[in-house]
Length: 143
Image 1 (tube, rainbow, N blue to C red):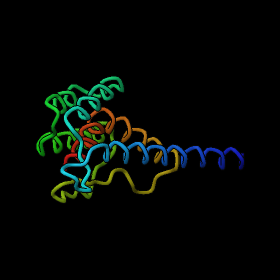
Image 2: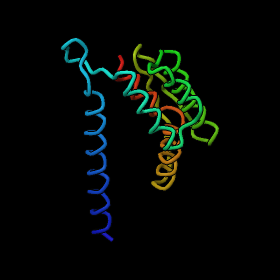
Image 3: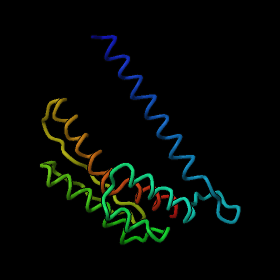
Image 4: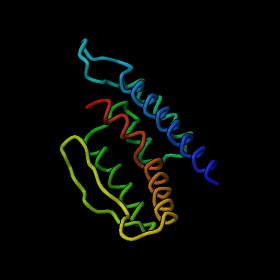
């Protein structure tokens, strides 16, 4: 059992590293006017939209990405849809912070078991992928 846990740990670490590399590559695909600020073009956003559709993202994601740009209102709507999805599934949302360019929040918590924590994380992943992921990537790359 100890070996299984250790192997699983390394699989998660490797997956996280691959995810970060892919996200970093996507966010730095293009550079605006030679600056070092990440920039995503409308073509990149359309590619995100196709990928999101294949991954089962909701219609609100397709609508937000349709014109190749994400507005602050569309980003805010995506984050709020994710939070609402969590709450609809019985996972509490708290400590919401709007920093101007990003909205951050906490979910779940309290005295819960590892199994309950894993279940809450699974709900978050489902909600995030359905309502926010592609919009979040495009927003971050555009701002």
